[in-house]
Image 1: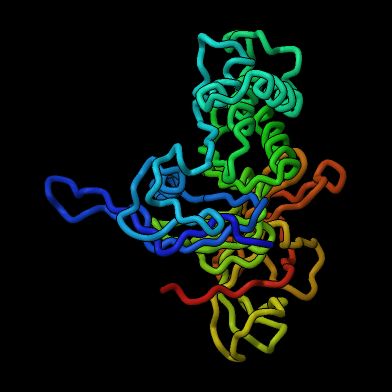
Image 2: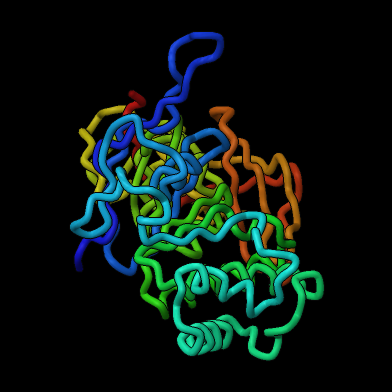
Length: 356
C-alpha cells in the first residue's frame, strides 16, 4: 500500500521559561502511515502526542522537519490548505445550529452547491446513525449523539487525513467503549487515513492498526497492538501498556531461563546469550498458579482480589519478588486465599534490552 502520511525529522521547541533553554515537545519524529490506516499516538501527559497532532493539523509550526500527505509537502501550508479535519475532545459543535446545519457548515463555507450539500450531509448522517435527528438542537442530544455530530461534520468534508484529539474522553465508560467500536468501524468503512490521540491504553489497542508510544517527545516504540503488548522493546513500554511482571533470570539455553531457581520458558524470538543475566517481562494472564508442587517456582499468595471476570493475585516468590497473576472465571474455578502455597509457571518470558 502507498504511504499517505509521512513525518520526517519533525521537531517542535517552545520558548523556555524566563529566557531559559527551549522546551523540546517533539524530538526527531519519523513516521510513515499507510493509506487507510488508523495510527494512534499514546503516552503519558506531557509526552508530546497532542503537540504532534497539532503539527500535522497545522495548528503549530514545526521548528524543523517535514510533513508529507502522499507526494505533497504540507508543513508550510496553512491549516485550511492541508486537507485535514479534526474531531475535538470538546465536540466544538455550534449550539445555535441544528444537527443538519452543524454537519453542513464546512461545506457551506467551501461554497459547495446546495444540492450537493444535502446529498452529502444526508449520506453522512445515515452513516453515523443520526437520520431523523436533522433538526434537533445540540442541547437535545445525548453525549454520544453530540460526538457523532462532531464526527459527521469532519467526515462530510472527505479529508485526506482525519485527526482525533481524545474525542471520547468526556463520555462515561460504557458509552466510551461503544463509541470506540463505532469510530473504528466507520474509519475502516471510509478507508480514511487517521491519527488518533489518547492516553487510554485499551482505547489505543481496540482502535489501531499501529500504535506509537511516546515518551518525553520521542517515539519509544511503533508496532501493531498485539506486537506492542507481547513484545515491548523497553521497560517503559511494557509498564505503560497494561500490567506487567518484571523479573530477572539467567539464560539456560535458547528456550529456557532460570528465575529464582525455577526453569521457565523463554521467548523463542529472543536473541540472548546462554549464561547471560537478563531482565524479563511476562503479562499477568500468562502466569499460571497450581496448588500442587511440581515444575515451576513455589510462592505464597500475598493478595487475592475478585474482579468479576477474573481474579488478581500477588504471589511472593522465595526471592522476595512479587508476581501478579490473572485467572479467568474465578466464580467457577474457586479462589486461592491469602497465605496459600502455590506453584508458579508462566508462558514464554520476553527479554528486555538493557536500558539506555
